[in-house]
Image (cartoon, rainbow, N blue to C red; front, side):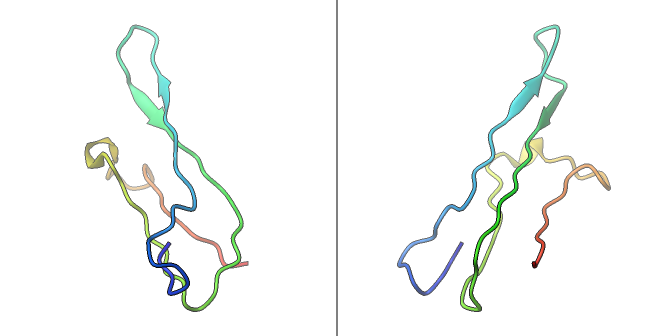
Length: 69
């Protein structure tokens, strides 16, 4: 998150990977995150992907989203 209230970017959530493998070869990874934050009109959210090669670009395979409650 970027906000004028702090001089540096803030990490609100960080995903951890779960490997699915049976023969020693990874065939899928999954990461699910969810939280509730009180944001102001000054705040800016972004997603940082550390390993772009692990993102599946097929439709409905990867989702980054936000709900306004």
